[in-house]
Picture 1 (cartoon, rainbow, N blue to C red):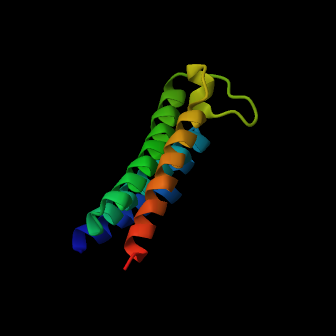
Picture 2: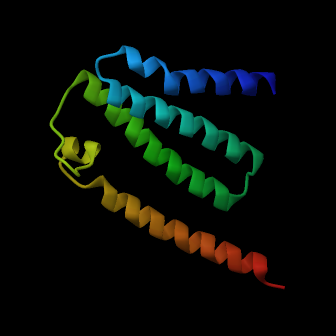
Length: 121
């Protein structure tokens, strides 16, 4: 528990204070937020290792990894992102959100079938 408390404190400080001292504040805020969410998701998965929770956590981690990777990439190699446009999609030239929607659809199906199986007598 001591390591968990220290880790949470470090993540909280990163998320709420370190980003203020750099030029690309919004991108560092996004990056720190993705790291915090990723760490918390990993802890949730460690405490409940069901396949369904693992798949949902894996999708969520994928989304947060995109945020972290694209924010870091954009800090070092700036590109234009239009209003309402996804940051990674603007760089790559195709809509990554479409892949996310397919993954979400598959997860909804998996979660729904898992819930039905859990409710069956």
